Image (cartoon, rainbow, N blue to C red):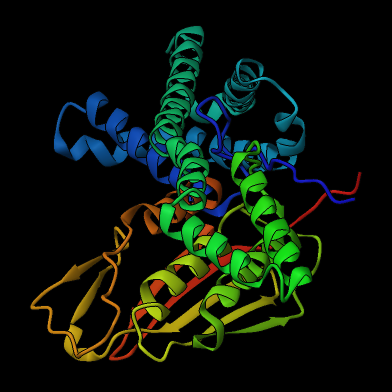
Length: 370
């Protein structure tokens, strides 16, 4: 049986950064170069001295930085098994040792005359290496602190959605209406509802197998289709998505719920939701598209917060009014993607005259064999 696992990226406030993540690597490079430039500026006595100081610092700084990133990339599986304190000490010790090793091996380059105090220079460069590591670890720690609440909010949001009176009332009434004529369908509906509650109340994992998220979303879709009947159609297109692919939990189901609640339900004749999942090389692509109210409703989607801005609302005669957008669900998804995958994940929202589309691209993370 497949089990969810953690990739131990920035998913906890005390987690080390994932040094195999491209976005994190770019952040390390930019911050480190900025600190080196700051040091050169502080050591220079005039503007004309800054390039010379930067060249001197870069002579030892560049090989240390590149070798550190390479070795940390190779050591990532071992770092995942360490506690945060031990991992932070290892991450700090590696650049420090590399700095001293490169300094002494290239001593003739850094001090050709031999007039400077080698121990003083070694201590100065070593202190700079420790300072850069400490500032980088502090930056990633603060960043994970700011974003980690999204993981906890995801569980809370799912629980609120499951116990929403609108959802429970309609589902239970639907089950009661068919319990005598269609007992098997009523039993299946209750089992699906129980699974949704169980998922919402269970401990959240960092990543889960994609087939579990698909199964949960199908169960939710069956409940809504049982309630809405022919007004709700759902088209699944799963194109070669491997079973060992991992995605954040409660990623697809909230998108489907928003499509039903904000897109299909307000339409008098309902509509069809298109769900596309495909694997393209090292990426997993997810797209959810649904029709929405006519253009004269003028619903504008805020791509940053995921909320509707209903401006100059003018409805055609209908028995349903568009629901006010839910900021939390889509904003929560964006934060979790940034926390788990940094710049390797992409999130895109498109709106048209009569459609609403959400596209998510994730790196293909495989489940490790037990």
